[in-house]
Length: 168
Image (cartoon, rainbow, N blue to C red):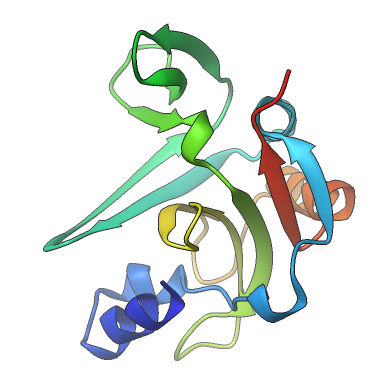
């Protein structure tokens, strides 16, 4: 998954995608374990502010900026529990099947071709594939102070790589 991410970056992806690239720490393994809902609730309550949500599929990349303010859950028969992060007016929705989220990685890296840092949250699946990347949204490294403090608190609480469980 990391190799594919790097290939997209080398292939001339948009500057926003390059900014979202975080360093992988897969070699060291997870530094903690948490329930998926525990992490999503902590992130929702942390005041991350505007976040760039990035999904890379085969043949397409989707980026959208929205405030990460809450998360609700819906049981989908035959598919599992769906976590939804959305704006109040529903102009933005991000859906995650919690049973497919296996790790979350919180990484700070230097923006490609720039001197400022990027603060990322990456959700990966069972085989290490990237499912969703979220980065603090700012202008050339200028982040809202409360958003940066919220990201740092999440990194302190959950570590650089957290194994996610779907147990109650």
